[in-house]
Length: 337
Image (cartoon, rainbow, N blue to C red; front, side):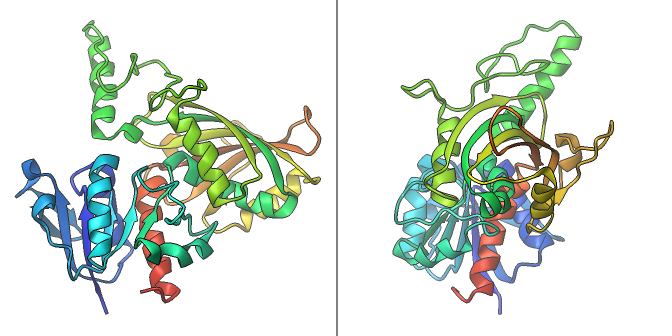
């Protein structure tokens, strides 16, 4: 039996990746609707071997729709995800709008699938922030083994995290610099080509950015409220793929070899950790891949029971579209639908 599915924000970078991922993984679909704003109506989105015409989100009737995969931006989601949920659809929302709502599960299937039990309160399930997803997938087996006390995270986040416009800005600035055109930042606060920017999302009163705050609070909701985490989130001149340098302090001893063994046993993780010139994974190598890659596993001598690791993943796939589809697959497999 197939499902009637709608993809909200289908013309965006994540929406297109959702359509692609649903087709690649042969999710059981009888009918799929691609929804976007009025200006995109009539354009076509690829879905496997077919092309699907984009429909107007504002005019769409969600009645009879089984599942909604939503990534249109938080403000749009705030209006349409509850509408779809009230119409009987199960909404898997990729925006920040519902992540900290206590009545909405925040789910990474390899980490906390049990949280799905609470989805029926609003018929909405939240997909975490891209930087949080890849991090908690790597942290989960380590936390189970030795219990994490504290994490210090530094992220290196690609321009695709800001959507197609962010990627275009990197391309145009890079090209322009070679022909001596002046740099005019639009999507980012400063020049992104040949530069790094320690600023993602808006600043908060305590000096952290909202992106950093998301990593802190989402990790507590998904993994363990007792974990302390501090983050510095940095935009880097990469098109696709986020990287993270994590320093982790544990309550109990854990050796490098024990960590490596635990990570290798974790679903969704691939360990590539060789102490040679090419023995680690970079964002360029993870683009288009589903896994979370872990490299550079080593002891941190500055604290008792400390480790440092390097974590890389495709932010459009595992960080967004793939995790969303995996939530839907878990709903089906575990009999929620």
